[in-house]
Length: 404
Image (tube, rainbow, N blue to C red):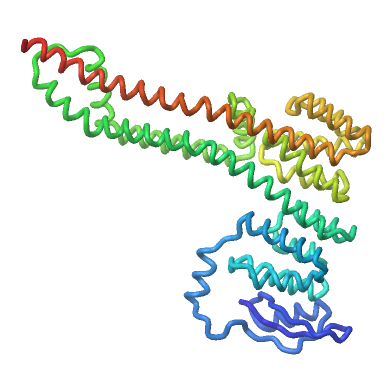
């Protein structure tokens, strides 16, 4: 439940805000913990119906685009000279997403109560990642919060752009696959059975291709439920196996070994590694802490375990490039670039260049995959449909010859 409060700081300044709690007493306790004196606490939005509250919470969600917009707005307003509390108040009035609006107001309330901005963001861990909060903390300590928020916005926009490229590149092949499956289903369930009746009534010997097609149609028509049950069971078993730690590790290793797909995943993760670590180091985050946060950002467990080993080795005084060279996941080009960055004392910018290079490599792999998959799907569809058409036309051709 949301409560609007008015309270007075020790300095005498009166502040207003919104807190979420189960009852009014908990709000007063929280305000006292924030070292402010509560003047008034009242339930927010009197008369607002339950249906409206449910609709706002059910049909809205906080996307990465919302967080990116929030970061960009904070940066712009701070550069314009507005204090942080005023920035949050202005943004909350402009935010259309009700859930994001609640989060911003909660952060605003905590900041007004004297809490650090990064700590207020960290309370909403489902919205703001450890990477995000760590960079904000570094920005607050270094007095460059506006620049950090701009970097965060740029970082998130780059991530969204890469993700959208992958999705758009795979949309057409996925569409072709769906069309191919639908065409085959229609042929086997509608077209072939009609011809089957005609062929069975004739006494002529059918070609091998036609006999194969009829046998296949009969098998699918009889045992479709068993095939469907087998597929569903296999999917559920694989999913349950992948949900275990050992299964997830094996699945991630298997994905890396796939042609093209494995290369795409590896280059994408290396780009993410370079972008995240470089951004954190560039904002003053200590390298061990930066590696720990980067490990959380990486999705492939094989690479996660490698980054975890990096932390252990760096604690012992080893260079990052030396440990990367021992790993089979990082190509020599990336290793050499990092080594140069360490020697010149410009590691953060070098990691950003590694990210730029491998994001371009990711685009190249995506284009290669699209170039291969599209004609491959067309060829598969043509072969399947061509076989069915050939198997149905051959008996008709023989019947017409016998009539003549």
